[in-house]
Amino acid sequence: MSRLSVLDLRGDRSDPRDRLPRPAIDLAAARQGVDASLRAVHERGDAALRELTARFDGLELAEDEPLAVPDQVLDAAVERIDDQLEAAFRRAIDDLRWFHERARPQPWEDVHGSARMGVWFNAIQRVGLYAPGGKAPLPSSVLMAAVPARIAGVEELVLCTPPTGVGPDGQRNGWPDVSILAAARLCGVDRVVRVGGAQAIAALGYGTDSVPRCDKVVGPGNLYVSLAKQQLVAEGRIGSDGYAGPTEVAIIADGTANPRVVASDLIGQCEHDELVVALLITPDADLVHRVEQALEEELPATRHRERIQTALDGQGTVALVDDIDHAVQVADAFAAEHLEVQTAEPRKVAERVRYAGTTFIGTPTPVTLGDYGAGPNHTLPTSGTARFAGGLTTSSFLVPVNYLECDDAALRRLAPHIRPLTEAENLPAHWRAIETRFSDAPPEGGDDA
Image (cartoon, rainbow, N blue to C red; front, side):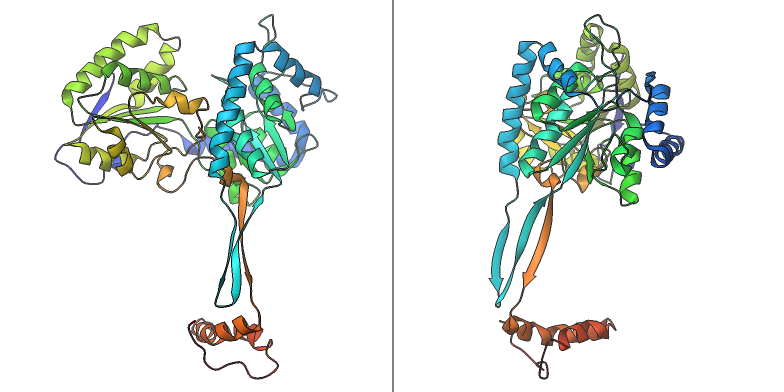
C-alpha cells in the first residue's frame, strides 16, 4: 500500500510552494491557549507556573517546593546516566565546540577617508534555553544551544524543560528527564527550571521569582512554544532563534539512490512527531515504488510505528520532477529544515540548492548525524523559513555593534554630501546637528576621497 502522496510536477516549472506539503495546524485555537498562558505568567509569576504545570504536566508543586532544580539533583543525574551516554555527551560537546568556534564572527576595524569604523560583536548577557521533554526528551537540544552560547561568551544560561522524568523505579519523580539534567550539568548551564510549554517561554521572557528574565530564548519545541516565542518577540521582550516548528526532511534522490536508505531517512524524521513533513524529490518514478516497498518492510519493526505512519499518511509526499535541475528548483521552493542529497554527484547538486537549514551530502551522511552533534547545529528553521533564516550558531548569541569615529577632517569631508540628503527628507535639524560642530561656516563642497 502506498504511503506517500504523489505531487506530479513534471512539465510544470511554476512556483510550487503552495502545493508542497505542510502540516495542517489550527493556529487560531493554539494562539488563544498561548495568550492565556502568557497573560497568567505575566500577571502572577511563579503561582501561575505552578498552576499550569499541574494542568499540563500533571505535577502538583506546593509553594515551598522549588521550581529550580537543585544542584544535588543535577549532580545525581550525571551519576545516574551510564558511562556510554556520558561519553557520547562529552564527544558531542567537543565536536560542537570545534564547529562553532570556527563559526564565530570576527570583529573588524578599518579607516575610510580618515573616518574610523567597524563592527564589534558583544555577547548577549542572559539566554534562555528550551528543551522538549514530551514524546521524546531531547538532551541533544541542550548541547546544541549551550555550547555555541558559551563560545560566544554568554554570561548566564537558564534552561526550562518539563518535569517528565522518572526515577530508577520507573515512576515519575517530579524532575525533568535525567538525560536532559545530565546534559545541562555537563554543559555548564547555570539554572534549570522544571517548567515546560508556553508558560516556560513566558517565564523566560517576563521573568518570575524563580526564572530570571532573559534577553533571548532559543531551542525547539511544539507549536505552543513556537507561538509563545513569536508573541514575546513581537512585544519586544526577547530575541528568538526563529520559527522552529514540527521537523521536516526533504531528500533529492535519483535512480542511483538506495531505496531502503531513503525510506529509513524518511521514517527517522517522522519518529519525532505526527506533524513531521517528509518530502522525496525525484525524477525517477521507479525509485518511488522501490521506496514505498522499503517503507512497508521497515515500518513494522519501528518502535513508534503509529506516530510515524500518521506523519507519512498526513504529510509524506513525493514530488515527481523532470530532472535534477527541476529538483533543485523544488528544493529551493520548499526550503527544508533538513535537506539530503542522494544522487550520482551529490556535492555538485547540493551546492546548487540555495535554501536549507542544513544540507546533508551523499548517502553516508544521514540527518541523524546532525541531530546528535557531528558539528553543525540541529536547531534549524522550519516551515520554509530557511529562505531567510539560518540555523543556530555562535553568531546567534552575539550582537553586532557598528561604530563610527570621525575626526574634524572626516566631518568636513562628509558634511557637504550629507546636507542635500537632509534637505531631500525635509529633516533640517539633522543638518543643524552637523552645522553646530563648526566654529566657522561648514564647508560648501568636498572631495570624494
